[in-house]
Length: 347
Image (cartoon, rainbow, N blue to C red; front, side, top):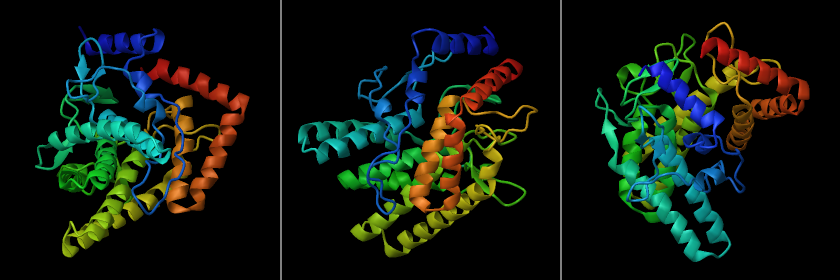
C-alpha cells in the first residue's frame, strides 16, 4: 500500500472517528503553569495536564507508546515520553504542595520511569552525536526515514532529565542531559539540530529537512531545554557534582546559545504574523502555512512563557496581538477557511 494512502487512512482515523489515538495527546488544552520561576528548575512551564492523563498503551515498565496505526503501528516517541514525564513531574510538585505525599511520590515515579527510558535510549547518530531517535518513518514536507531526530525532542528530554536529577540526585540524569545538549549546540551538517541562516540567525529545528521551515512551537520548546540545561548546570555547580572548570564552560555555552536564539526570535517573530493569525512555520510555498486554532492558542501560551523567562517586551506584544486575533469572529473563521484551502492544495 502506498505511503500516501496510508497517510490519508491515518488522517481519516484520527480526525474523523472517535478513536483519536496519538492526536489527543498532542492536542491538549495548552496552559501556563502557576509559580514559574526563571532562575530554578521548578514546575515545568506548561501544565501538560491533559498529557499526564494519557490513557493510551504503555510498555511493561510504564513507558508510553503511540499507536500510529496501519504501516507504522505502535512506537516509542521520545518527545511524547518526555512531555508525559513532565506532566507527571508537575503533578508531583502540585500534590506535594497540597500535602499529598503518596500521590506526589506516585507521580514522581511515573516521571522517573520516562526519564529512565531517555537515559537508556540516547544513541549515537551517523556523526557520533547522541540523540533520541524516532524509529519510524514520518512525513513533514518530505519523508524522514526511521532514525530521524529533532531539536524539539532533545530540548524537552533535557527539561525532564534536569528535573529528575534535581529530585533524585542520580547523576545518570545529569550525564545524559550533558550528552544530549551537544546536539543543540551543533549545526545539522555536524550531527546537531541547528540551522544557521544567511543572516547568522541560529534556529533549533523540529524537523531536519532540506529547506528548514523554522516551526515556531518546536523552536520554543527546544529553547526551553537550553534554558533548563543552563539551570541544571548551575544547580550541579552548587551541589559540587560538576567540576568548576567543566561547569563554567557548559554554563557559558548554554547561556550563549540561549541569548543567540532569543535574538533570532526577536528579529523574526514579526514574520510569524499573517496580519490576522499566526503562522505555524516559515515555509516558502505560495500559501503560507497558517497555524491551526490549536497551534495559535499554543503560540500565545508559549509567548507568555517567553515573556516570563526573559521580560522582553516583544513577546508580550505578540501575546496581546495574537489574543486579539483569537477574539475576532471574522479572523477566526478566515483562518479556518484559509487552513482548509491550504490542506486541499498541499495535502
